[in-house]
Length: 329
Length: 306
Image 1 (spheres, rainbow over the protein chains, first blue to last red):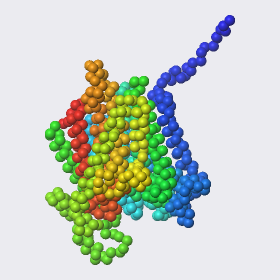
Image 2 (image 1 turned 30 degrees about the vertical axis):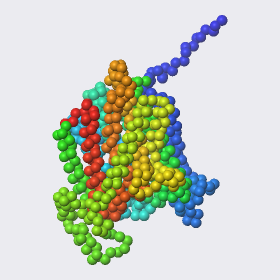
Image 3 (image 1 turned 45 degrees about the vertical axis):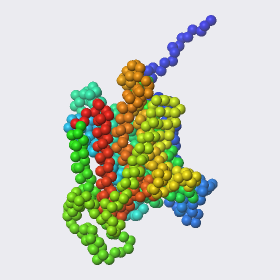
Image 4 (image 1 turned 90 degrees about the horizontal axis):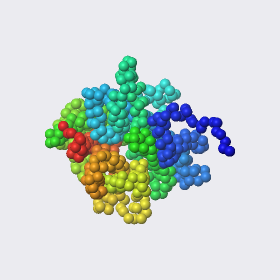
């Protein structure tokens, strides 16, 4: 005799009520993309390693040992040592901190400038939009990197205007802002700012497009009808709703900025000794790769893996969040 | 159409004027001068040098003289660090080399990138697609200055197939052009794939297929025109990337192009040379962008040029 079931089948009512929001849909789609998930995991691991390794490896990134000189990877130095006998692993992961900070800070800056610019242009429309986007068009044709190089050479020098400004800002926080050890830090800050200032143009265009599509929606009218101000509508209502494409583009900006920093360092303009960044380490390694290949290999590998993962993650996010693809599935 | 082109080209003049002005004052207001050096120069000699190169004049007079020389006679003035040579001579010597490198790399990038992207779009989600797009991702993620030494070491110094420096025969050009082109080719491939996928799903392609147009003609005559639009609009930033990349390529392969002079001139405080190179770069890029805009309007009937 068949057993009579008295219990109702288990239904996750809560889940049904929540429905499929944009974010839960996107998350589900992203999880199915194995390459993107693996990339995300790799990036997290890389960031953890950059935070942890320099602190616990027992070697200082700047500690030279001229008697030792360059040695291949060994038990004592897993990635070998560089020309000055410095432990390469400590330098590579310290360089990772610098490279990631440049990528993240410059992207945040480009986000702040680009999202406000595009948001305001798209929301107000008309003349304001025409003027603001015309400025973006003109700036697009500017060879910016050339200006960054000029600015860095001419204005980021020791005791220049910008360096003095930096010392004034730093003054209250450290014992002696005139200490030469802060100079390389100043140069890195310059790179943060310069790269942030030149990479917001595409962000502005993307945000503007999103805002124009959103501003005719009823929720904007509702907000306006209860007396929400223009700026509050742009920043509290429109931008949060355009977050999908913003996140995708920001993820793709990070590797671009890291690559640009590496490029500047290669020309001898970005990160300076004794600090390190992946670009600077790679540039040094490239000079001597026929004799000491490991000095190029490790930083280049780290840089390539990170850029690779960030690009794949960005692509995966785009596929997951792009509403046009949403329609077809 | 003609009036649009004329207007667009005239529009470049104020921008270039702005570039000239900004760079002129930027380099002169910065600390340090062209004749500062480690060795102490006698003050009389310094004064004589400054007078010779008209650097002791008031700033505004220098600016006026510079503009007059530039616009009336097309003369950038003498180089500070290469005695006896003018900026015009340096540019006349190095620009053709850089242009050759840049154009070859651009053509090469399009020749690799477009077919790769088309294959990706035609055979979406097959092994060929994944392979092409993975290679493209490598191209985007590996900096030129890592790729170049690896190729030099393997093909040049390891297998002795290709020369690794200078700019003489076509064999000298292979490695630098390839290294310069690969990242650009990778972007072109990705844009082509995305653009083609977009177009292939549109109604007019369905109509063409329904009317029995052969697959070959659907792709070549109908889809390509719209599908390659993203590539056309990428040409401006793409060429800009190639130019900037040439700073690295010219240095690694020891090519006597303009990129090599640029960083050096800035570090040397060679005001006139910095000015000349920046202005040539700027003019090139902005003219190319104008050409791309015109081409875009011609290719895409939905865009109206006014």
